[in-house]
Image (cartoon, rainbow, N blue to C red):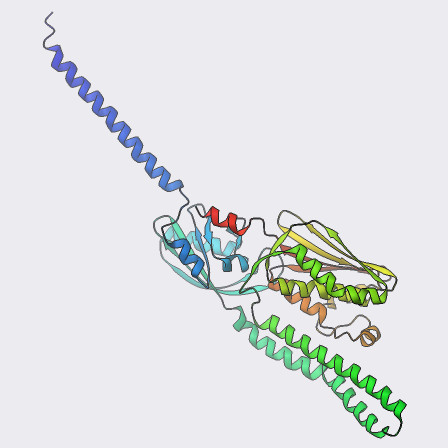
Length: 384
């Protein structure tokens, strides 16, 4: 059989097979590039820099609603938790924008973080970022909602509480004038006058501090805070007062835990708890400050062996000017504002505070805050 006609046929078949193979390879390469683009978590150039520069809280999410990058404000407001949106309401809005492609602007009232019951008033804008990503920007308008309530509370506090020490100062001044010829009486009245003046100054300062906590967001410049440093600073501030009363301060628990917040405010909160425990302890006794952590939260517990709190008053201990023992508070110069300040500091950090107590056996106040699980360096690496 003549093989000459078979040569062109073989060449044609080879060309077809080779072309098909090339087409398959090219198609596979194209599909691989498309798949790589779909699974890639990198955002367009320059987005990271813009997110870091924004004063608003900003979050970029991939098609699976994983947080690709987020601004410090988003972490401070508790919008991001474990590289996901912490608020179901925000997830719903993001899904709607992804489905319709239309930007959404909405005003929301949501809880701050996974702990506590403090509400945030946010104006949220959600829009597509390219073909794959979603950009969420949130402006915190909570302060404007707080101002009216703060003004009312401040006026009520001034009229109700400051009139007592102011009246006492006036009466003592009159008594001092009448006893001008009796040196012993003058010294006694002067000492009481100094005590009332100091109490008045302390109360005024704490009212101002409490009003500031209610009126502004102290986490505008939030940073990662080492809990060890907070607890040690609070213990050091109370060491002299405890030693003078025969109270032993004992600290312990887990180390190297971190939270997101304002270190000075957290030190104030723990300091107030320790000072309160010292005030209501019966010497000689101990005040323990323990730190523990779970997967999502950290706890700072302050335990005393003092007089305790009756069950019917447990719900009121965080009210302004509430005092469990009025006589003891007057003798120690207590204003009744310390625990209220603690409550607002903790709430502003997206946490909660709990209390356990039994009359005659003591009390335990526990601060619970969201735990920082990844450092800022780790978070920045996640963007790439």
